[in-house]
Length: 319
Image (cartoon, rainbow, N blue to C red; front, side, top):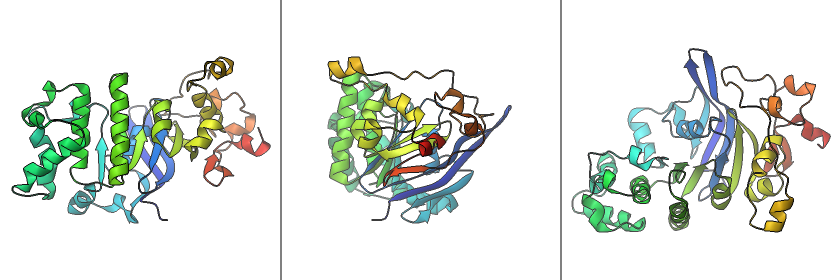
């Protein structure tokens, strides 16, 4: 079965006064139809930039983004606009992403107008169907974004993304700005919509528990690179890269006996300067098992199982 999305050696460079920052450096992954890839890592590791580059909201410096076999990086103008129907995004801050001057009905209908969907009388019916799909009452059509709660605003953002009938949605920290009780509602809504509409997601989050709940596969990023990728069961049960081990050790376990016996892995130091990252393995300056050779080479992927690989030269030694 061919992947819906294939990202190959994606790179995004940003010029800064201090030098060039490799925000995304050689990232590769694929997403199957109807499945979810979780992207996790510390703030500043390149998760959101990767999502924006996939959608061409930020143009990649190098690499390919193949959607149904077509490279999005080479599309411009009308060709790219046609593809945007199939790829949408849900931002972290719903209120900031919604035009404060438009009522909810026009916010949702705007996408229909741009793409020429549901013209005439069908437009109003489609908007009401979309609101119902995300659990919003019809009387909110005339409300403005500032009159909505955080949860309602995020439902409108989801509604707007669904309006053009996409196949893949990038969810960029879609629940991190919400209260915990509302987070669960939005996560359940996203899962229900995925099952009903066959959507594929790239789910970006720093909340490892939510990523575990949402994802089929998980990619762990560190300083612009994916350092480990596997099915969620494998990466949460037995992570192999030292950074992934440290991340997963922070995920709480609901069993009190197991939780009290677990050892939390605390990393020394801070995230290195992305303008001048460490030579070789970028994680070596904080790695508890680093050796001299780690400074000499950027480790290639080491395959641990058919759907599981990690970038660490110590893995070849069985560490």
